[in-house]
Amino acid sequence: MADGKDGLSVEFGEGNKNILKNLLEIGQVVDKRSAKILNDIAQPRATKMKERVPVMTGDLKSSIHVSEPKVTRKGAEVKWVAGGSAMGYAVVVHEDMLISHSGEGVYYPSPGVKRSYTKRGQAKFLISVVNEDAKAMKKEMAEEFDKAFMKFDNK
Image (cartoon, rainbow, N blue to C red; front, side):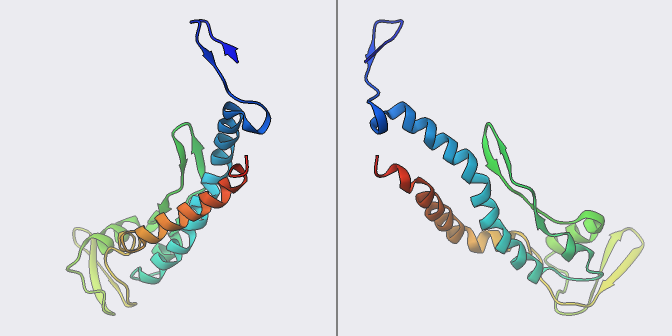
């Protein structure tokens, strides 16, 4: 038992049964594994996004990627990134549902500038993948964290 300043006593257990030790170990596992798990789940979705993107020059398609995993005090994160030098085109073809993505079309990146594209794709090529795969991604995350925490089940 550990006596606190306020006179309370707390039992943390001994050896492998020490709750505080186990919580610290779990925190370390979460820090190490979260970024990798998120990255592993995000990568195949980036590939799906590339399959759906309308193509004019290929710059937008090649710009789609998953950011480097980042761990902060708030948790781990990865982001799907798209646009780069094709940002004007990206915004228009992603957001404008009225543009034809059936094979040929035009878009206006700025007033008076008309561009065309000739390869098939679809609007909402990023968010449609996220929305369609949301349940699967949640399940995949749960399964991966279950695997990561398996070693704590025996303590």
